[in-house]
Image (cartoon, rainbow, N blue to C red):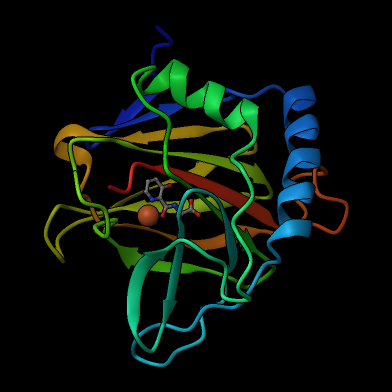
Length: 202
Ligand code: MD6
Ligand code: FE
């Protein structure tokens, strides 16, 4: 069992979980995913365009539009979501469970200026399963709050190759990305940050 390098408010961090070579290799797999299921700019139910662009792999993809936040079996363009890359499934087996695979691998892309407001991950049927996330590319400032809105928060920089596991009491903690640090990684030739989040949906 891999042990966390740091824990903040019950969220386990595995810093440097993926070495640079594994990151480059996974990036190739992600290019295939994005070729099959192009990144799109989601709009919140309230009508705001998100600054992050996204797509998914797996049985389900996470989407948002005027009809709400939800999981869908197909990409907004009508195509099927591609399979979750093997190295991502291996990470899940190591850090979460060998009992079942995740249903969804959400791919978030942050260009310069992109951010993600404080939110809970609560569109899944069973909060007994943790959410696992991997950061690639430029550093992102991750803010961690509480299981209810408001209160004090703490922040930590997520670097390329870092993994977070949000389970147990921490499963419904509010969290978000305040900003990225452009130029802090050379992994992506044109810069930016990619975050993968793995979830059991139903
Ligand atoms: C991000 N992450 O790192 C956004 N959610 O870009 C998340 O929203 C997230 O890192 C659930 C569990 C872990 C996460
Ligand atoms: Fe989240």
